[in-house]
Structure formats: structure tokens, C-alpha cells
Length: 160
Image (cartoon, one colour):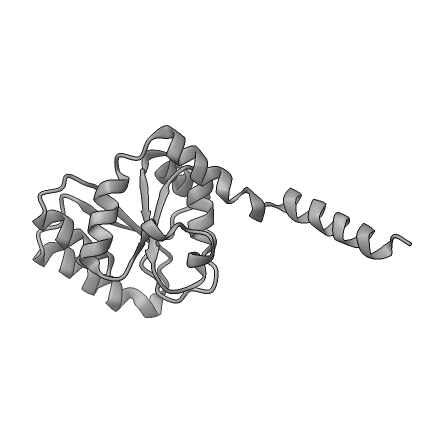
């Protein structure tokens, strides 16, 4: 799906760089090779790079250089990667079905590749204020927030 969206962006003459990041284990090497072939066939080699088994430091570096996180997983229950990317100030572009809809604004959700491409194109120019707002929106998922709410809840239940 990410490669299909990259093809749509290319057809719209949008300048972009896309890193597709994921873990690669032996059983998935044929699929990885298939993806590399699709990148080449669709002329996406200049725009798309497949990165496998990146360590946390490289992932943080990629987040630091990026503007948008395109998340193609449809129906994911929560989406920790999306929350982490938002925390780093990236604009998330997520499917309109799944757990991400609980905390990602409707205008950042897509139902088709073309819709995703339009949202990505629009999101590349998000202001610093919009990015900070996204980052602040996921603070409610942090450990400190959880601990404080749990303490408050327990004290309300225990209080005479």
C-alpha cells in the first residue's frame, strides 16, 4: 500500500522521499525482494528506500528528518508507532478504520491511496504549531499521565 501511495505521489509530480521501515526475518525475504522489484518497476528508486531491522537510534534519526508518517496497516488495534511518531512531531496519515481513529484527527485519515496521497501532500507543509499540537495530543498515553490518573482513581475509590 505504501508503494501504491508513492506511485500516486509520483504521478502527481510531488517531490518526496519515503523510507519504508520494518523488521525483516528469513521467512519474509521473498516478500522483501518482491517489494524491491515493485520499487524498480514503478521507477520509485529515487524516492523510496526500504530499510530493514533499523535500531532505535536510526529510527529516531529518521523521525527527526521526517515530516509525515504514513501508516498503511488497516485495522490495527492501537498503533504505538503512530503515537510515537506524533510525539516526535510527525503528521500521521492513517487508515480510516482501526484503533488509530481513536486519537488521530479525521482530516488525517484516508480511505484510498489517492486520498492518502492528498493528505500526505497537504501535511508536508504543516506548521510548527500544528506539529506541536500533534505531539501534545499523545501525552495522555505517557507513563506519568497513567500513574497520576491511576493514583487519582484509587484515592477516589478508597476515600471514605
